[in-house]
Image (cartoon, rainbow, N blue to C red; front, top):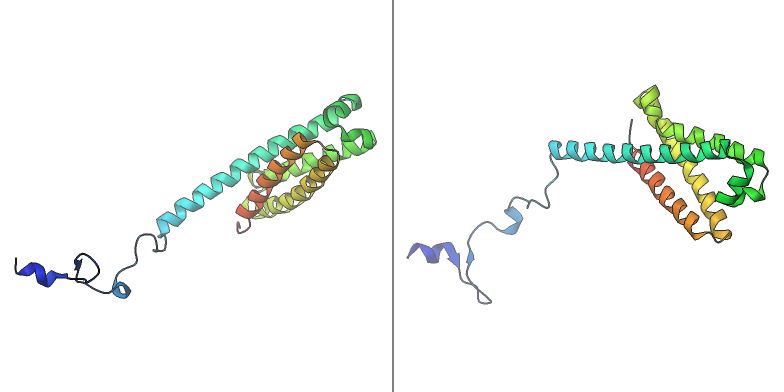
Amino acid sequence: MSATPSLLRKSLSGPARPVGPSPAHRPPSRQNREPNLRQKRIRQIWMNATAWTFQGWLAMFFAGAALAKLTAPYDQLVLLLGWPSLVPLSSVRVMGFVELALAATMLAPLVIGKVAGMRIVRAGAIFLIGLQAAALLVHAVRLEPGLAFINLILLALTTAVLVLRRHSV
């Protein structure tokens, strides 16, 4: 019992606390510690998988939208989308080619390699962000909330790809 008083220091404001090094000399807690190499690598793998998932979704969506704009009859496009009634059919077809090319940019690293492919992904993401911002504006002006919401989702996915790929080699 005589060892207990030497290991504990009585506090006037509360219960006894252990005697030991001051907080300045204690090792950092788990929350304040830098992640080790293994943790960084695991995080990097998950971020890469997330980016590839988003890139795949964007490529599928824009390839499908492009094929619809390239192959569907004008009347059907006007019925489905609305905005083609404001422009000639040739403009809708050009938009289809642009979307098809931008869909391909999302998958460029699979075809041409990582170094050049990631640069193309970043460039494609920038153009897709511009395209989606313009589409969002068109749908908002035409009071089409469903299509505007889809554009917001696509804008968020494309922005996430750009952010996740900003440091990719």
